[in-house]
Image (tube, rainbow, N blue to C red; front, side, top):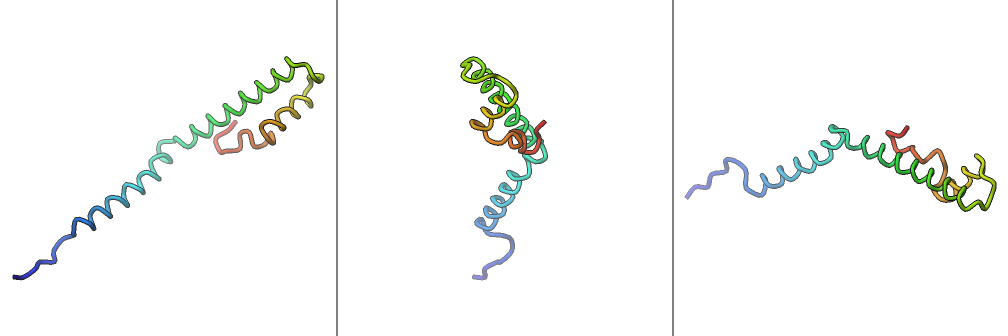
Length: 91
């Protein structure tokens, strides 16, 4: 009997489909804007946490509440102020 070598095997087709799915999974969030939305969400969460830290420091009244004390408390708990919204879509 003669064997025909036309077409693709099932394994080859499954591998091609898997590669295409992986490429689409990487591409779709960029096209739909999910990454910017996620960056905005992180930025807003960081801003809210900074506000809560300032309110907590003011409520505790351990130190005088001024801009320097607020920035110091935020830097101690959240890190540098420049990095609060540096993830791309921040304000």
